[in-house]
Amino acid sequence: MTIELAPQRNDRELEGALWRTSTYSGTDNNCVEYSTLQSGRSAVRDTKDRSRGVLVFEAPVWQAFVRGMNDSAA
Image 1 (tube, rainbow, N blue to C red):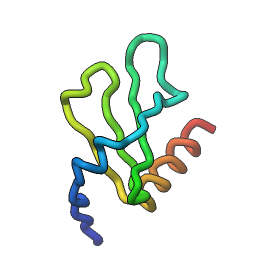
Image 2 (tube, rainbow, N blue to C red; image 1 turned 180 degrees about the vertical axis):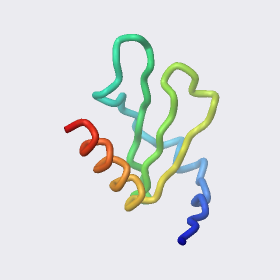
Image 3 (cartoon, rainbow, N blue to C red; image 1 turned 120 degrees about the vertical axis):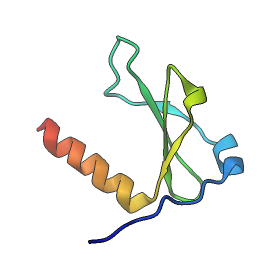
């Protein structure tokens, strides 16, 4: 079993993030925003409550998540 520790967050990197709303977000205000950071990692946050914080993922973890979501939508 492999245990991965959460990567260290660089708040300065988050300050320069360009956020985009997911194309899967609906019209009922259940939206997420994502950003590809300068480090190559991906960040995700809740659009309606940005104060709740940000989740940051290493590139391979994010890519596996997106592939899994695409597979489940098919």
